[in-house]
Amino acid sequence: MNKPRIRCAIYTRKSSDEGLDQDFNSLDAQAEACAAYIASQRHEGWVAGKTRYDDGGISGGTLDRPALQRLLTDIDAGLVQMVVVYKIDRLTRSLADFAKLVERFDAAGCSFVSVTQAFNTASSMGRLTLNVLLSFAQFEREVTAERIRDKIAASKKKGLWMGGVPPLGYDPHPDPKTRGLVINADEAETVRTIFALYDDLGCLNAVMRRANALGLRSKLHRFRSGRVQGGNPFSRGQIYALLRNPIYIGKIRHKAQIWDGQHEPIVDEALWDRVQSKLQAASVRPRGWKTAARQLVATPVAPLTGKLRDETGDRLTPTHTRRHGRYIRYYVSNRLISGGTDPRGWRLPAPALEQAVANAISRHIGKLAHDHRICARPDMQRGDAILAKAQRLVSRLSEGAPGHLQKILDDGQITKNGIVLRLNVDGLAEALGVQPNEIDHAVLAIKAPFELRRRGVEGKIIVGDREPQPDRTLVRALSQAHAWSTDLRNGKPLGEIAAATQHSESYIRTRAQLAFLAPAIQGAILEGRQPADLTLERIIRKPVPLDWDAQARMYGFAQSPRHP
Image 1 (cartoon, helix red, strand yellow):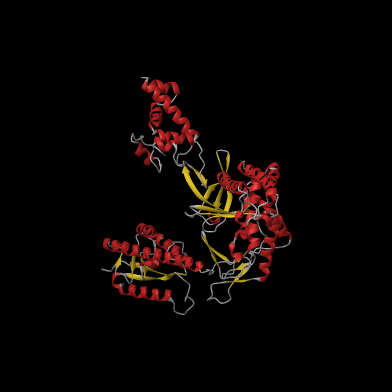
Image 2 (cartoon, one colour):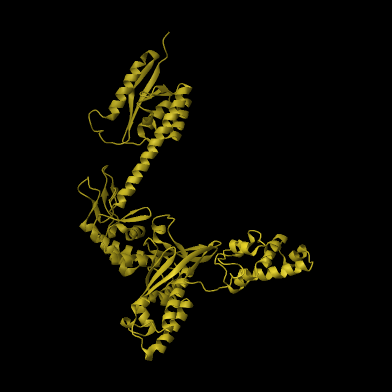
């Protein structure tokens, strides 16, 4: 009795195209081994098909492969009953994709066999072994991908260019073994022109129109396949991306990190800083309102633009959002805007930061002016006049005058525990009516503690020694608590109090316990000397302890509650 014929298809794959141009390559070696295996199974009725299914230079992490798709089509048509491969990872390296393939094979009555691994999917043990081996194949692929990502990150940290389409202004190094960029003189001139145009015009749309009028074009790149990309007029988005790319000052960006590159810069850092400051200022400019635009010229929206950096040296960039119709401003580390997430990045509420910086400068100038220490050589005749002008400046800064803050502050840096500010000698001299060379250089440097504390969903910024500031919500709740506790002691039912105040009984019960706080803690709340993170929500979250020492520990008082 003759065995039924089993039509076999040989499938081969290689991840890279290296060596495929040889007379006898890896695909040929795989096909030869598979053909020999089929010949050894001739007594079982196996017959090799005439069609070869070869995928060269394609990863096993995807099913979108031309030869594989042709094979699946032939399987669905009933032309193939057995797929033969050299190793299982030639078919796929993904466990999920393998499950899809096996399901499709089963539906068409097709099996699968590996030449170098003694099993096939016709038996249950073969399926189990196959799943185990394929899990390791997928693990190997993921580990390889991790190694490649780590290698790219380490190489970029050294300033190396890791391939891809080079940016406008650069070409790959002529030595293919050198991971670097060389300047393309003609394209570099285009880059410098665009930076100069934005420095002059300060408007992306205006730069786009001028660049296109000058005939400037994006980078023209020819791929090995013959496909051509670029060489077109610049769009607004392309100009913005070009102006934000740190590669033009000799840097290499990798995700949120920026490293010193090994290539030559095209633009100088002074021009780069001016352009970045203007881009940041434009990012918070109101759109579509001419009156708002005119007002923006007179009153800067973000006076700290380009002034502050975080502890990593990254510039704090103004940004904004709209929430429930409200326009909310922030200063954030620039890498959070251009490079994604970073747990070390800062995101600070703009009004609070501006006011905190202004208050720190006000206290500094006010104290030095009171002690007649503004000038390097004190002048008793002008001392009162300087003090009067310093007091007016302090008053304006405390009232939130962004123009004065922008003129007086030169730069600064914020860390987790402190803030360092450097004043602009010309702006300070103009405000105080003295010559810049008369001001003591010690006046220009300010160091103060800095703390960001969470209060609900908002952050409270504390710069310098915190001045007493009563919390209106806490004071009002404390007053209500005493009124309600008095009613309860007089025998008034809790339900009647709740009905009279239009609150629930639980609302009254949780807030009335504020009346049992230690007298010294209540006094601190009334005077605003409580810890900055002590909120009403924090107090009512748990029952108030009757022990005053326990209250002090729970609510963050460093000293005894009798003397908070």
